[in-house]
Length: 455
Ligand code: TRP
Image (cartoon, rainbow, N blue to C red; front, side):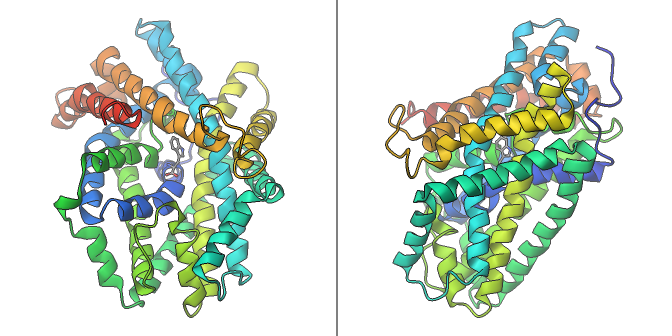
C-alpha cells in the first residue's frame, strides 16, 4: 500500500486538535451520566480502581491499535481494513470489521441522540426554573412526561441529529475541529465550576471517599465485567470510530503517547464528574445507587433546593449537551466519510444523506417510551434492542476482531512503525502482548457474560 500523507477528507491541524476531537468523542453521556451511576450501583472506590486498571491495561492499548489502523490506511473504516489486508496479503474478509464498526456507530447514534435530546430539553427546563420546589415524585414524573410525549421526543432527537449533520457536513477542519475546539474547553470549564461548587456543599470529602476509598468486599465478578465493558464504551472503542479520527492525524504525531493522553483525559472527566455529582447527592441526603435516573431525577432535586440552583442546574445540563454532541458527531463521521469514498458525493450531500437516514431510524428509539412502547422485537423496544445489540454484540465482536487483526494478522514491524515505536522497545512488546493475549480474553469474557452465558 502506498503510504498516504493525508486523507481525502482533510486533516486535523495539529496533535492538539486530534486530542480534543478524540477526547470529545470519548467524553460523553458515558462519562457524565453512566459512570457516576454505575459507580454508585457497584459500591464506589473499589469499582473505580478496577475501572482505572481496565482503562490502563486494556483500553489504552486497544485505542492505540485502532488509531494506528486508521492512520495507516487514511480512509474510513469501511475501506481501511480492506486496504491493509490487501497490502499485507490477508483475507479480504477483514473488510467486514470496518463495516461492522460503521454500522455500530450509526446504530448507536440512533438512540444516543434520544438521550442527548433529553439532555437538551433538561437544559431548557433547568434554566426556566422547572425544577423549583418539585417533590421527588414530581421530578420523576417530569422525566416520564418528557420521554412519553412522542412529539417532544421527536423534536429533541431530530434537533440533535440536524445539528450533528450540519457540523459533520462542514468537514473535518471547518466542522469537526471547529466544534470540538470551542465546545470541549467550555465543557471542561463548566465541569471545573461544578467541582468547585461541590467543594462548598460541605460534603466534598464524603464524595471523595465514596469515589476513592476502595472497599474490596463490594467488588463482584459482575462489577469487574461492567468496568471493562464501560472502559470500551467510554473510550469509544471497537466501532472503528477512533480509526476514522486516526485517519486525519498528521504522520509525525506519536500515536502511543497521544493515546495515553486521550485515555487520561477521558478518565479525568469521568472522575471529575463523580467529584461534582456525589457531594451534591450526599449533601441533599439522596441515594448514590439510584441507577440511570441519577442525573435526570436525583440531581435536579438537589438543584431545586440549592442556592443558585437555577444557574448551576442549567450549566450542568449544558455541559452534558456539549459532551453528548461531540460524541454524536464522531458516531456519524465514519458513515459520511465512507459514503464520500464510495459514491464521490460532496461531503455536505453525504452528511445530509446519512443524517436523514439516522433521523428516520431514530424514530424507533425516540418513540420507544410512547407510541412504540408495545412494539417489541425479541421482547425489547427499539431503544433497548439497539442498545443491547450494539453494546453486547457488535462492539465486543468488533473489538475482538480488531485485536486479532492487529495482534495476529498484521506484520509486527508495520504495526510498530505506524505507532512510532520500534519492535525491540519494551513499550512495544508490552503492547503486542496485551493485544495478542490479554485484550481478546478480556473481551471474550465480557462478551460471554453479557450474553448471560457465564452467569
Ligand atoms: N464514548 C462516548 C460516551 O462515553 C460514546 C461513544 C461515542 C461511543 N462514539 C462511540 C461508544 C463509539 C462506542 C463506540 O458517551
